[in-house]
Length: 126
Length: 166
Image 1 (tube, rainbow over the protein chains, first blue to last red):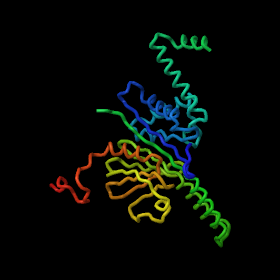
Image 2 (tube, chains in turn orange, purple; image 1 turned 180 degrees about the vertical axis):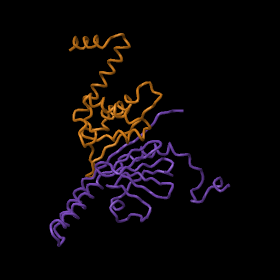
Image 3 (tube, rainbow over the protein chains, first blue to last red; image 1 turned 30 degrees about the vertical axis):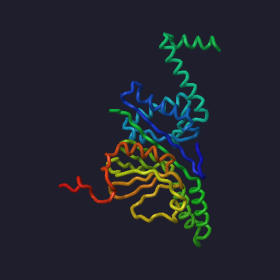
Image 4 (cartoon, helix red, strand yellow; image 1 turned 135 degrees about the vertical axis):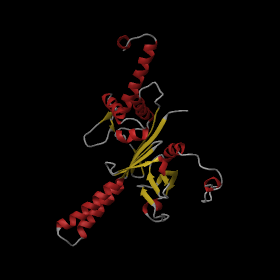
């Protein structure tokens, strides 16, 4: 959360491309993770409601909700009844670790490693 | 042709408005010479107004701009891009935001809670909307990329030769 002249503010830049092979909900999640790792989003900041974001990005609200739910399962976002979707306190660390794990998974797949083989490799290295 | 869709969203909260609302409500409750209930009702209205005007939310897309005020962002105001003639990123002074020095204009809707970067929408109806947002340039870039190209030439305010043709 940023503070300027006694004002609390947050902002996000979003981009999705239906031609991208990555699913739309994954692209939205990537936007959030990138904003976290680059410091544009901070713990406690609010994300726009799914319906609002879906309207401006011209996608289905369920797609945005799916992205938000996936991020909640990863521990990046938290939903509270009657309050907006917010960024968790340790979200930046989690997001960067998850991003690194995804890259490792992609590199492992390219080299013929299965997820279990990668897990075994990590156990061996630890 | 790229099919990438860009959007920008922001929320600005001014705790000063909440504090000012609470102070005004307290003052009102103390000075009105009336029974307790009659004093509390206007005080509560002033306090809730302070909370309501303290939060400004905007989401900008290539076809729609959604504005919201208050903690719940209601009522939500959707402005389709065809209704927008132009958008500008300006920096307002404290005097322009809080009253003194504001260029008086009947047709301006102000959703400004602090001095500094502000998005100004010029609607096709001739109305202006000012919204406090941290990065108005990003919003302007999205809006202008979606607007039809403006005719070149000096801005005289008169219709161009092309527009004058029947």
